[in-house]
Length: 239
Image (tube, rainbow, N blue to C red; front, side, top):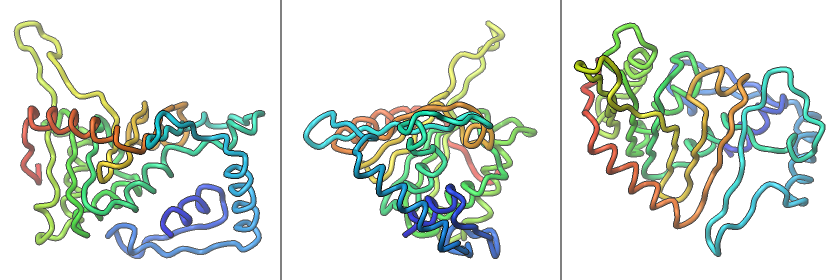
């Protein structure tokens, strides 16, 4: 159901408003029946054409996703039908049952997705977030993390863990290493990997590209994430 509402919203057939800032469960949706019919007809045609996904193995599926540039009008039906990154990530988040791993270097605290992510620990989903430069007092990352922390009830904050992968080399006067990965792994079964940060421009107007993988191979991505996460510095919230 969450995936359906998100699809309708992104295609102009539904609108949503938040009664407060407690995540997806507190959003109110309104739909236009004629627009719903149009969108569902288009989606049915896309599924029937089977042009979006390709098999990489017996159980593994790869799908391309993208954010297309603002003002860009595709001429190809295949490009028009490619799923957008914002909807893809939100759908994954809404469908999570037990765990979500996120690697993302830069945030936009105004995104609705921030409240969606905060709703994960609220409903018992173990949420691990790998980011960078949380010590920057004026950065959006710090603002975003504190906002998420405030949205999570005290009884559920143990489900939310943040780590920072960034080190500055004082001798060299340059960055020694940092995370630049953009990954969302849900329940060890589906994984998004792409170029987009969780910022408004990356999810609405930039040209960004990524892949969504489903199947046993996702466990390999989870293993890599977990080892790098454990290597990174724990972040005590609020910052």
